[in-house]
Amino acid sequence: MSIRRFALFPFLAGLLALGACSLASAGSDSPPLPDPTVDASPAQGEQVAVLAGGCFWGLQSVFEHVKGVRKVWAGYAGGAADTAQYERVSDGDTGHAESVKILYDPAKVSYGQLLKVYFSVATDPTQLNRQGPDVGSQYRSVIFYGSDEQKRVANAYIAQLGAAHVFGEPIVTQVVPLHGFYVAEAYHQDYAERHPDEPYIVFNDAPKVARLKQLFPTLYQPEQNVVQVQLH
Image 1 (cartoon, one colour):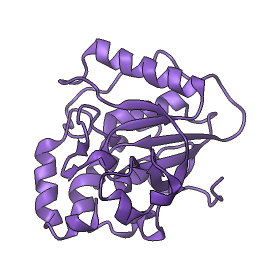
Image 2 (cartoon, helix red, strand yellow):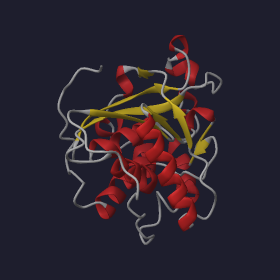
Image 3 (cartoon, one colour):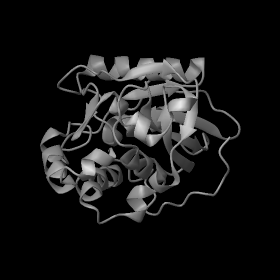
Image 4 (tube, helix red, strand yellow):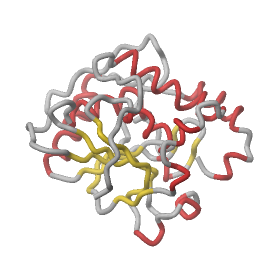
């Protein structure tokens, strides 16, 4: 989702992406993924999840439509603070992945449910260093865990999905510790909401939200009904 992409006819890139989508993010007739057999223990107060997998525009749009999610920020994780700028990350050599930080209420949506949404509609976990038309290590599929419990839940769910053979190829999603999350530039925040008619959004991100509504009718919220809170 780099500046370079805009020079490469995003309309055509979107069409190519339709052919590259996986079971998780494309076919409307594919079966839903199983619920996680291992989930986080009930917790009091707001919790945070950090996930990456492709352009953060689509990730942010998907999770802003999940009930129980209070706020989602687009940003960078996996690299150093001094390289957490869009132009640097787009070079693909900073270690960063385009990511989202999700602030959620565990009484309304669990960490395991967020991962089910993630694997079902937000990312293709079988693609290494790319998602659809976006190529580079900054688009890799990554779960950044903030606790041992998140690590346990993520690894257990990946093992569960692998044992069930729900994807045609092996899952390559990384599970790594979170060392820092850096909020992206203001023009990236809520990009899909602010540019719904842009071809890239129409072909790559809007279908993910539609898929969320189809697969998760009880979790789906039709509006981006999130509260304004400060990042912390």
